Image (tube, rainbow, N blue to C red; front, side, top):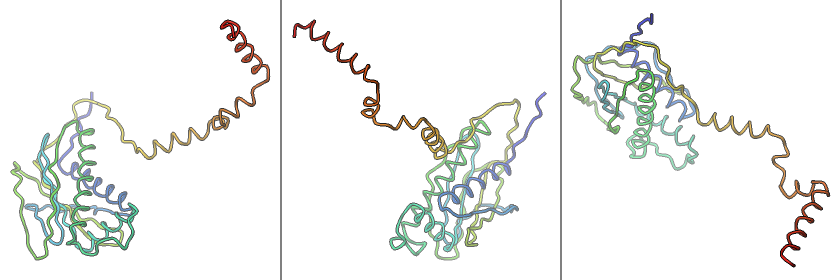
Length: 242
């Protein structure tokens, strides 16, 4: 008999935290971590200095909000752009810059894409997201977002950048549970870069003769092979009456 496994809202939140830490760490070539404790909150809010949110729907509904401090947003933005090969002299210095907002919105999109991909495989459900929206807030202003959730569960988790700048993830979703009724196998994750590197290694381990020019190979063949080719050519010319 299969033992039923129950996945709760907090388990789903943990997967989202892993996606945030993984995407921001890999794209910025730095170490972004989340706290081991989660805070229960009444509702999600956009707060200073740079807030980003997205609503998802499908198998379950929810809302994701990330509130970046100015220092955290600039650090992640600059590390991301430098990792992409952009010269430091061309980077923005203020979190109010449109370029910073665009980059953070793109990173939010990648985070949700990674999260949705994992959820779709592990929970065998389908959800879709809205386009992430960014809002620069310069004053002590709090904005609540109504996602029309039934019996919502709201949580806040703190994150820390490599330079110890803090930002917060706020998450709300329908209170729900996923119960595994039967065993199943889902496709495991793979890294495209690792796959390319593996094939490159296999190719380099082949016989070194595979890299030799075909002209050199022909030159190294025995002379008898050359004579056989000449004889075939002569026979063809004789048949043609030449």
